[in-house]
Image 1: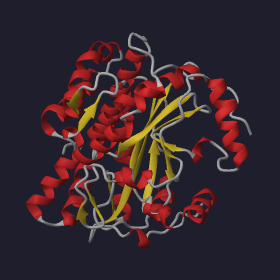
Image 2: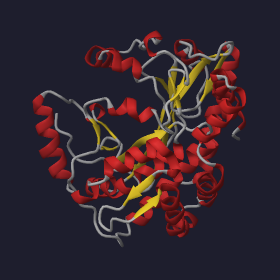
Image 3: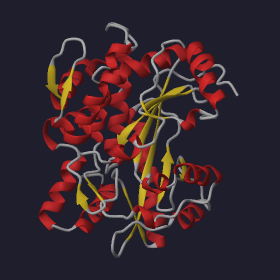
Image 4: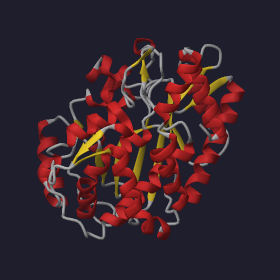
Length: 375
C-alpha cells in the first residue's frame, strides 16, 4: 500500500512518547508488570495514552497534541503521577533511563501482541535486547516537503539531542563507557540509521517507499528505525535518538528545544540541507553516544571542530527569540543548565554509582528522581 499524501497537522505542534521501566521494589531488577499495570490503569481515564512495549517490563506513554511548554509539562506530570499511584498499588517501581543497568535480556518476556511476536520471530535475540527505553518527539509539519526539509536540516542537531538526553551509561551490570549505550542496541537493526536523502514528498512516497515495499522488506513506516522518520498518518516527523530522561521535566524541555530549532530552520535563512551534510553524520553520532556533551562535532562544510556542549550553547543563543515566541523559555533554561552546569543524566547516574558502588542504587535513584522531578 503506497504511503499516499502527507497528513495535515498544525506546524510546530508537539507530541512526546516516553518508554519507561517497570522494576521490582526489592532488588530493583526489571519486573514483568505491564499486564497488571495496564489492567489497573484501564479502570479510570488516563491523562494521555499508555500502551505496552516490546517486553513486559516496559510501557510507553504518549501525550496529546501540544503547542507550548507549560501545558506539555503539565500533561507529562499528570501521567507520571497517575503511573506512580498505580505502581504503588501494585508494589512495583517505575523509572526513566535509557537502559536498565543490570537486567539480563535473556530473562525478558515479549509482550503478547501480534506485532511484537512478529518482530521477535524476525529479529531473534535482538528483540529482547531491544529492552531499552527512549523518548520520541513528534513535530507537526504543514506538508510532506516541509517534513523532509526539517528531517534533513535537523541532522546536524542530532548529536545535541543524543548528548543532552543520554541516560544509559550502564548495561548488563557494567559501565559501558558510553553516555548513551541504548543507541548501540537500536543500531543493530538493519533498517536503522538515517533516512535516504530527498526533499520531495512525492519522490519519497512514490519512489523510495514504493520500491522498498515492493521488495517485501517493509510494510509501513513502523518498519524503519531511523534516527528521524516521517509519520505521514500524523503529519509529523519523529525524532527517535533520545534516551528516556530520568525526569519528565527534562523530557518536556528537550521537546520544546526541538520545537524552537524547527521554527528557526523553517525561516530558511541557512543553506538548504544536502547529501554532503551526512559526510560526518555517523562520526558525530558516535561521539555523542560515547562522550556525551564532551564529544566532538565536525562541520562537514567548514571542517570546524567544537564540542557538543559548545554547539548546544551556541544554538541556544540562536533560538532564544523563537523560544520566547513559543512560550518555551523555561525549557531552554533547563537545556542550558544541562549543557553548561549540571550535565546529562548519565553523569548523574555515574555519580550515584561512584558513591555507592552498587548498581541497584542507580535504579533506586532513577525511581526516586522520576517521582520528585529533580536529579
